Each structure stands twice: as C-alpha cells, then as structure tokens.
Image 1 (cartoon, rainbow, N blue to C red):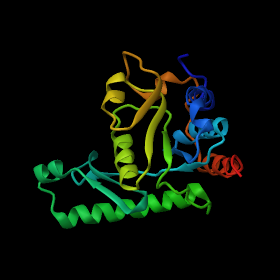
Image 2: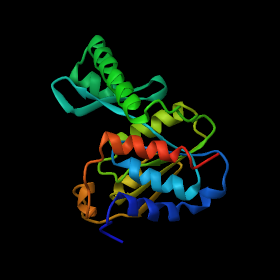
Image 3: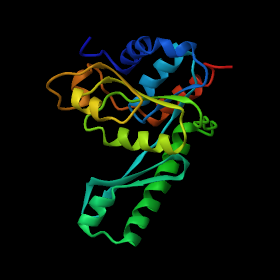
Image 4: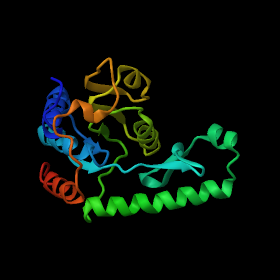
Length: 214
C-alpha cells in the first residue's frame, strides 16, 4: 500500500475502507485544508456524501509561534490550553488579541477556499474528518474538540497514514487509518507525489463535490 501514488489514490483507498458509511443518512465529509481536500474529495465521491472544509487555525505563543496555546475553528469555537497559557504567563488580553487575529485569518481562508459555497450543517451529522495524514495530531485534536461543541452526532477521523500512537490518542468516536508505519517522520514521506495543493485546486474540488448529492 505504501507509498501512496498521490492524495487521490489515498482517498480512493480510504473511501473503500469507509464504504459502510455510504448507506447511512446524514453523513458529512469534512476535509482539513490543504492536503485533506483531495483526499476528502475522493472519499465523498465514493460515499455519495457532501464535502466541506473545516478550517482550524492554531494560536501560537507570542515568543514561540510554533507552540500551540489553543486553536480557533468554525462556529466561533475557541479552544485554549489553559495550563500552557498560565505556565507561560501570557496575559488574557494578549491571548484575546491572538485569537481575534487568527479567527480573522481563518475566515479569510474559508472564504477563499469555499468560493461562496454554503457551509454544510454539522449538528446531528456523522462527520468523517479527513486529512492526508497525521503527524503530531494537534490540529486534528482541535478539530475534534470543535466538532464536539458543534454537536456532531459522531466523529470519525479518517486518514491514509499516521503513527499508531497518535491514532490511539485521538478522542474521536472512531479512527480509520490505512497504514501506521513504525518509523514516522513526516506525512509527505509516504507519498510519491506530495505537491502543494493550490487555492484554485481546492476551490475546484469543492465546487465539483457539490454535485455528489442531490
């Protein structure tokens, strides 16, 4: 199975593994941009389910932007790592400023990728949350927490490849992962073609996916 030829092939294989969801009502495929969109497109097409994006933006610590102190997600959801914030002594007003800035960036990304397509309703849906792979799982955990607050009926994380330890730690209702290599450095190492997905490609896939369901 490994390496995958590209994200489209990985998505088709993942769609086959998720085939049981094709017969279920109120199933929604949500893709994490950028790399999750081609994978999610293939999954949604095979299941005959709607596809949408789920844009999550990390809140970086002021002195170390790579360190996540929280995340913002659709629906006005803001998740904060209170222990980290407290340990670093970050003032509340600075946290609010970071969150506001990232929420603005998140909305801009969402508008750019979706091209005015309406957002799919999440409440009560069985959500299949897709990415092209998982390394640390920080973004995926934030997305899961946001979907809980948005009252998704069921959360299924579906990825082609991830470390087994990361999969075990995800607080989803179900995790479907095609491959869990023992040695894992980056997601890209498990793809022959791992080119960046452009804004135009994402918009085109979302537009075409709008025809998958009546």
